[in-house]
Amino acid sequence: MRTPLTPFGWGTLAGSLVSYAAGFALGYPEPAVLATGGLLALAAALAWTAPRPRLEVQREVTPLKVARGDAAVAVLTVANLGRGGLSGLRAHDRIGASEHTIDLPRLPRNGTRTVSYPLPTDVRGEIPVGPLTLVRADPFGLTRRIREYGRPATLLVRPRTVPLPVPPSGRAPHLEGPTSDNAPSGTVTFHTLREYVVGDDLRHVHWRSSARTGTLMVRQLIDASLPTTTVVLDTRGLTELAVDAAASVAVAAARAGFPVRVLTGDGPLPDTKTDPERVLDRLALVEGGTAGVTEAMRLARGGGSLVLVTGDPAEAGRAAAVRRRFDRVICVYVGTGPVSVPGVTVMRIDSLDALPLIWGSSR
Image 1 (tube, one colour):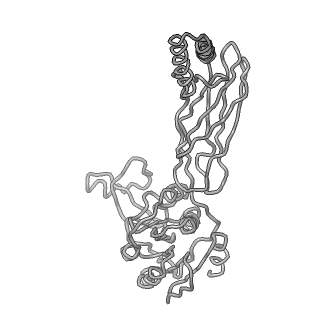
Image 2 (cartoon, rainbow, N blue to C red):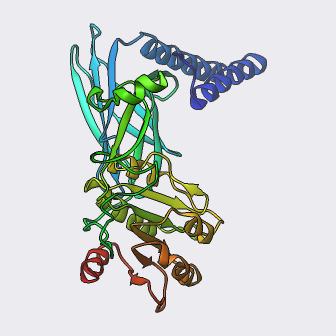
Image 3 (tube, one colour):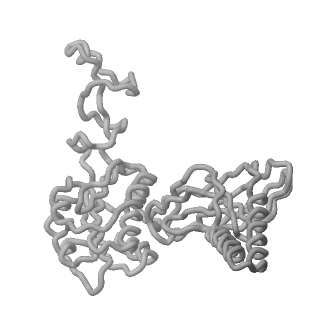
């Protein structure tokens, strides 16, 4: 906490000193009277802001995670715990690169004021909120007392999504399940034996193998029928529509409990799996890049559905090269002009609301 003079206060002090010196040097009383008035005003301003207010301040951001364009607010509550009323309080809250200012009404003794103000959600990503400072200034604006309260918060603006059915698969799943160790855990089909880790179900312990190896071994079971959805997002010339479309596809599969992989030209997004909340959190932070997605599609593990989201017709055409490795390949095209790729279902959209209609008609 500090009690500095404002620029106007420093100017008043400097002007008073100059006026007093001029009046003394020239022998005129008028400048000295003006200087005395300025110094008295400064003394009164210091007396106004000198008492240390006893305040209880809370600022909450709700919700902490929000879809782009939805409402998010900061709720500021200030309680006066002092013996007298307080006037001239102003709150300053840093929101991203800007600052929001709130003039608080007079706080009586034991009084509480609650105000709310909207937070910007038109830009996807992390928006820091805070630090929050309370400023108490005198009526003349000569002095002020500044104090920080609370901790900064972070508002996460996620992509917008629309409800979609799970991407259809063009083939029936193999009854014996996949042979990859990355297949989702389940309770249906035996896949392999592995070492026990804390948290494994003891009913899956394979005692004969454990006795033979001297290490506790468990049976790994998988759900062989769950199709994997691979979403490839082209981040060159990235648009919010492209991110929203990719998020809608990935979240649809994750909410249905199916495994999801989300790839960009810079590599896979970590920890998506079957958690729609993680999918949205990771896509909220995706930024534009310079790498194409041709290599990402080539290296992606086959099986299930591949959904490419791009605005580049050349990348859309390259999706045909991987169609044999996936049950179905879909291109959500957010560019301009017609695009046709043999063996690939192309869905051209110019708004997110158009995606469910086109998506449903292609099933």
